[in-house]
Length: 526
Image 1 (cartoon, rainbow, N blue to C red):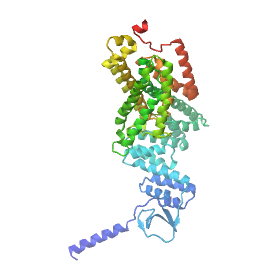
Image 2 (image 1 turned 60 degrees about the vertical axis):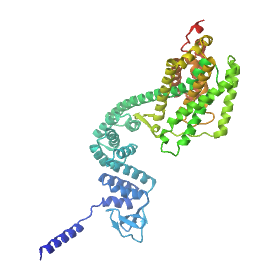
Image 3 (image 1 turned 135 degrees about the vertical axis):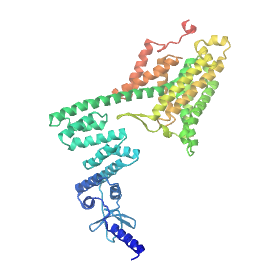
């Protein structure tokens, strides 16, 4: 035989021998139980497939969940249209004429969901592993223990590994030896996750005294950490509400402090700013720059509300200076007109302003503490507006004129300050800041014609409590009332908290009419 023929014969023999080798298959017994077994056997089969760690098991489990698994005699098939795969090897096979569907109930579907998540623990993508660990943290089958231990051994991300260790500890707590249960209790005790507390409560009255005492110690440690999360969350909620009250009251502090005008339409100026944000959002809706619409909405809300405020001052309010009752009634009537105008333009139903992508979600500081990005941004926005106001009032000529008119209007007029023009610009500035408050409020709730009604009373309370015309007093009053509201709400509910704060303000003003910070100046001293 020639050398060429010998080489071809050797190659053919090698090919035939390779074809004769068995194709690697999934655990045949597990797949058989999955298709033909009873409910508990099928659950055990899912655990066995997961423990095997073969990524092809995901396709078999997914086929069962999606109704693509069928049987023909003892053969188990995955059928997709006119194509059939052998469930053991995932190789193409002829499609039999007679087949029966394999049905999965809700309990089995839930177990499959956990199993598919567990198989993703070996994914090269950290995001997939993190999502899988989060799913398993809600409860994992004991059959997945081997795979979870394998995932922990090779996991390099500290957060994901910590979550998996909690999952494994929960398994050991339920079905491990005494030593494993004690180790699991210590591991759970180092967590601040509320689900760890739930697991420990199950063994807090265990018959074994050592396990019972260890569980109680770990429970006390977890409750201490959870309490800190609740305290920090309450403090942040107070700062968040205080920031919203500050934005709502800052403009009123200028108009009321400068001109003594009780502007009952201030809440509607907030509402106009919110609707301006809604309109700007509509222009950006179908563009590639939707996530940046706030860059246009913020100045738009300020300008629109400011122009409306200046128009009100020039047409109505300037004729009522020194007549507080008439001013109050007039601005209340204006508020009704503005509310009805918005109902006519936009309808009586609330409209929704969507958060940009960077304001969605939150920052998880602790297991039971998530700080929403939209609230964080509002706190930062309120701080930026406050700093801008301080710079305007202390570093500009307009701010000097405003402070002069606030302290002594007659003397300011005598030295050449155009008080009428200052009144108009000041009212426009205060109204514009109210519009900024509406822009911020649109990011935490729906926008409707009655939006401002919920903040007018709180705004006046902040201004009066802090001291008329005092920027520092307005800031402190907003934060104090924000904290007081949230603290009292946690004890007695929102309604009683509002009543308690109102009673406190009434008593405080009776004792100290000038507020927290008294206005200083020769006119006041005289």
